[in-house]
Every structure is written in C-alpha cells, then in structure tokens.
Length: 395
Image 1 (cartoon, helix red, strand yellow):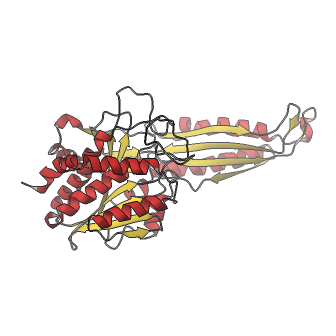
Image 2 (cartoon, rainbow, N blue to C red; image 1 turned 90 degrees about the vertical axis):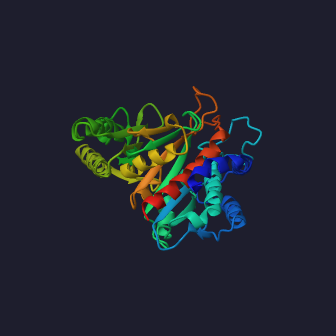
Image 3 (cartoon, rainbow, N blue to C red; image 1 turned 180 degrees about the vertical axis):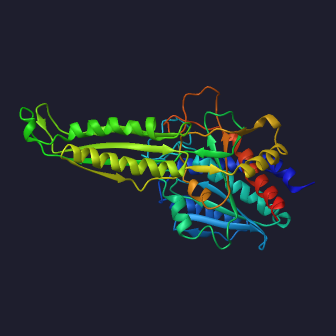
C-alpha cells in the first residue's frame, strides 16, 4: 500500500499522543519570541523521533526529513500564545497568568510534530525533502520575518510552503483550501497632530488639533470611496481619537489610532502613502503639524497559490471524503504573518475546522474559545499527505 494512503490511519493511532502534546502546550503558553520552553519541548520530541533539529533566531525550530537533491517543501506551525487571560474552564487551561492559547497555535504545533513522526516513519519513500518550521511570534507578526532573516528559506533552499490554521467556528475535521488572496494585510498607525492649545473661549489664539483630527478622519474615508478601483478591497479604520482633558481647554496635541487592511500589496502601499499625504496636508491647511507612525507589528497580504490549492484538494480527497475538503475562492479579513513566506515562494494555506459545537459564539481570540481535539489526527495527516504527494509531483 502507498505510504500516503496510511497517513490518516497512522495519525488516528497517534491521537492520544497528539492530545497529550497539545495539552502540554495549552497549559504552558508563551508569548512572542519568548517561546523558549515550547521550543525546547519541540526539540526534545524531534530528537526522540530521530531528527537533528536546529534553532532559528533563538526560539524557532527547524528540522529536515527526506532526501537531498530534490525539491524542498516547508511545513510551518506557529507556537506562540496570546497575551490574554483564558476563561475556557478547561481542566488543562493555561497555568500562566495573562497568556493563553486562544488562537489554536498549540494544536498547530502538536499537529506538525505528529506529521514529523509520520514523515520520519516513511522517510525512505519521500522523493525530495521536507523542512519543518516551528515558528514563534506569529501573533505580533514578528516571527516569520525573523525566521526569514535568519536564513530559514535556505540551506536547503525552500521551493514551496504549506501551513494549516485551525478554526473554532468551522465544522470539525473539514479542510478549507484557499486559492488566491487569502488573508488581509495588517498595518497599525498612529497619527500625531501638534497644534497650539489655549482657553476654549479664545479659539482664535489657538491651533485646535481636535478640529484637525476631525477633518483628517473625514478625509481618510474618501480613500475607500474615491481612490480605490471598483471591486478592489481596502479598509481604513480609525479606532481611537483622543486629546484634551476637560471641557473648556483646547489641547496642544491630538492622537488618532487605526488600522489599514487589504488583499493587494499595491493597494496597501497606496493607502499608506495617501494617508500620510492627507494627514500632513490637512494639518498644514489648519496651521498644525501631523506625523504618521506605522507599527513594526505588521504583515502583508497572504496569497495562496492557486495551482497548489487545486493539487491539494485532489490530494486531500484521496484521504478524506470529498465533502470534507472544500475549495475556498474567497478571502477573510484576518491577517497571518505566513504571508512573508508566501511572498517568497508558492504557498498553500489551509483552514482546519475545529469547532466543539456548531453555532458556537466563541471564535479565535475569545477568552472562552475551545477547540475540538478530534481534528488533530486530520491536521497531522494533511501535513504529511500534502508533503509526500507534492514531492512526488515535483521531483
């Protein structure tokens, strides 16, 4: 029997081990680039399987399986948690105050470790090489860039990449395969408006930054209405405007906070440039000054390769019932720093349903969110199935 036809059966035999690893990660969440203990646990498990793992940028982990000389497919799982307090009520809830795996990265790490075991067991059958990447700092959008800068795409050179993300709303065990624009970019901005304060009874002696902020806010909405091509998607949201402390005093400064999201790199660049122009020019018109600061916690749009997506649908349907594998032609406004890897090589992004109960109101990043552990063998097998079949096709 072909190795790929045994992956799901073998993963199901590993279910108890997958659940145990997931619960270990869930109880012991770590944030950002500080996934030291998580990485150490991953390294120990990989060594048990016969791998020779390497650390990347201190808290990332990589390892390879297969034969050198052929194509290389990277499989990625993110390891970091969210800076929030868990309220799930689970027996294995977070033991760390202010940190919780409320996005599902604990499942991702366990699934990729499961896939590592599946692939190691079939290493002689692989027709190329798989590079495993356990990545920190996805939530603050720092991790993928740190991995790339540390050389994870080389030695050996990566030809394509694949990642899975669980979803607490989608039907458990269902694979949603995305092709084309998949996740939105995410940019956080701060506009600082410097005026000249004074008493509210004498506005003529002031330069009112709150007035300037109001005009900037209105003008920014025209970017979506009048400067985006018909059918193009771009969102610019101002979520906070603050300035002043009391009723009758005009402040010296006002601050605006917001976000920009789009599925197109060129649109992203246009929106960010025009936002800076509008803020500066409107402020100047009212005798004020405005500067735009962009957070380093950003990501670009994630585009999933259409050819890889079509191939994956057929590959997964060799393993699962046809209705359990869904080809997705739409995108969603969430962001994912896997986009930086997708910007380098053809990439596949798949969402794995993990709902405990259909109709649940608790989605990702909610303190009460729960994930169905029954999806773990499917995720592990999907990683292995795609890896093995892709190498076969691209030898």
